[in-house]
Image 1 (cartoon, rainbow, N blue to C red):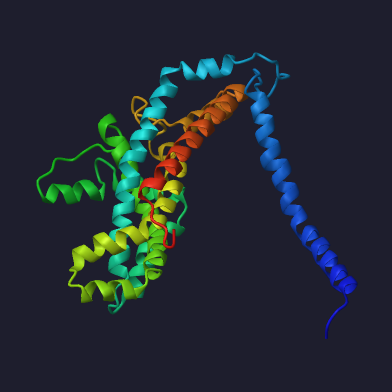
Image 2 (cartoon, rainbow, N blue to C red):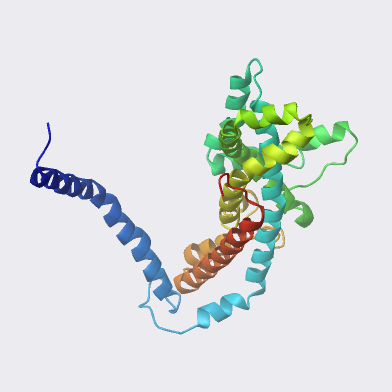
Length: 301
């Protein structure tokens, strides 16, 4: 039955009001607890607030203090090193495993479940498990390495090995989620492209290089972007496993924000750090987005 324009307009208005009523709790929560908190932290970054005193405006003193801090600069280097170690390795391994799981072989569902299991565990639980695995005296990793003649390594107390150890844990815990993303991307590649390549005489390597990789670049870009944002916010692993040590080898900017705010109660300094980290992530993401025009292929463009 056709409805009059007035009736359709009334229904549209009623649906709009109902939608806003249902969205209101979430929108109000975001405005108060996300955007409101951001604005307030931006203000605190220019104060000497320490939870027990009234915030006093001190200009850019917090930002100057943070940017000239050797430890903060060290934390930026650490987290950059962690990103370089973990993200390319994670992407390459996840893509390789996803391609294997994309094959039609018996029991593949079981393997997909096994590989995805670490993704559902909390980072703290993962860190505690790996704290045992990486233990110098009784850790299973050193025991396995001893079978091939490698001397035991104090993974969590040797400055040059702590960050690679954290990257290893991060890759292990995050690879399941990436595999799911890459599997979805692989399923979206038209089979006709591979069939045409076979007819033209292309081998497996040529199909991988000229079909799989180009068609997967949007998925890789998505994974890379999330990895960069998450990598520069590294906190749980160093907090649980190393407490930022040894010799500040695993201290990260977010770890310093936590220490400044909740250990030393320097909320002003912590807020300044948070905005500097936000700016760093924003710049890195913008560069990544800008460079994507050179290597990300979108079908139909």
